[in-house]
Length: 356
Image 1 (cartoon, rainbow, N blue to C red):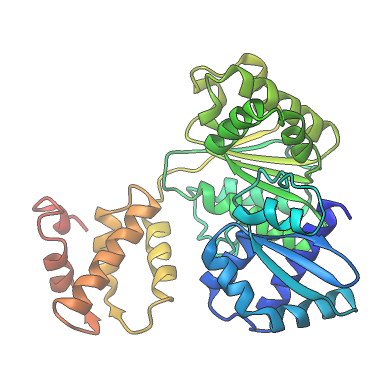
Image 2 (cartoon, rainbow, N blue to C red):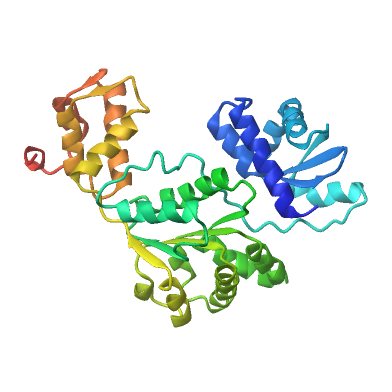
C-alpha cells in the first residue's frame, strides 16, 4: 500500500475527528495531524507512528475514537496500534518486518489556523492574496512557481499555509509537501550522509504541491541547488504547483545560481508590503474577534495602528501587550486611550501619539 494512499487516509481521519468534535482542542488536533502518520494498514490492523511522545499519549488515549473514524472511512473495523517513532525499528523487527525506518522528509504540515478566510486583505497584500488563492484553486495551471516576497512578519507564511489548507479542502487526494528552506538544506545534507538522496528526491517527485517557506536559505549551497533544480524541473514539467516565500526578489539573493533565479522568475513574483493604516485597523479588529471580554475604543485602535504598523507581528504583539496590561494591571474590560498610553509608556516616543 503506497505512502500517498496512507497519507490521504490519515488526512481523512483527522478531518473526521475535527468535523465530529471528537478532539475538540485545536492544538491537540494539530499535534495528532502533524506529528503522526500511518505506517501500515491491513484488513485487521492500522499502525500509527508518532514522532512526539505527547502525540503518542493522545493517540493511545483515543483508540476508540480512532477506530470509529477508520471504520467510517474504510468501511471495515481495524485494530489501532500506536508506536513512537524512536521505537520504530525494534517494533517492526518484533513483527518480522523490515527494520529500516520509513523515509519521511516532511516533518512540517500546514498550520490549519492559517486560512484565506482569516487573512486580512488590503492594498498592501491584495496581489499576493489573489495570486495565492488562484494557485490553490487551480494548482499547476496558473502561476508556476508563485514567488511571494517581502520582509518578515507581513503574512507570507500565512498565505503559504492557506494555499495548502485550501488545496486540501478542494483536492483531498493531492499530496502536499510543506518545508522551510533551512529544512530542505538539512534534508539534502542528511540524505547525502545517509545515502538516501534518491529517496529524498523521490518523495518530492511524488508531490502535487510543494510549498517552501524562506527559500533564501538555500543560497550558497551547491549540492542543495543541484537537488532543488532537479525537483523544480520534475514538478513544473508535470504541472505540479510550486509556491515559495522569500524576503527579497530572486535576483537579490546572494549566492543563488543563475539557473535557479531564472526558474524562480518564470512564474509570478508578487510582493507583500507594510500594511497601510486601514489594513492595520482591520487586522486589529480581526484579532479582537477572538477576545470578546474586552472592548476597545476606536481611538485606541488608531493609536496602535499609527505606532506599531511596521509589520503584522508587531501589530499583534502590541495588541497582546495592551490586553495583558488591561487584564492584569488595571484591570478593566473597557480600554481607553489613557489605558493604552500607560501600557506603552516608554515604548513610544513622546509626541507620536498626538499625530493621529
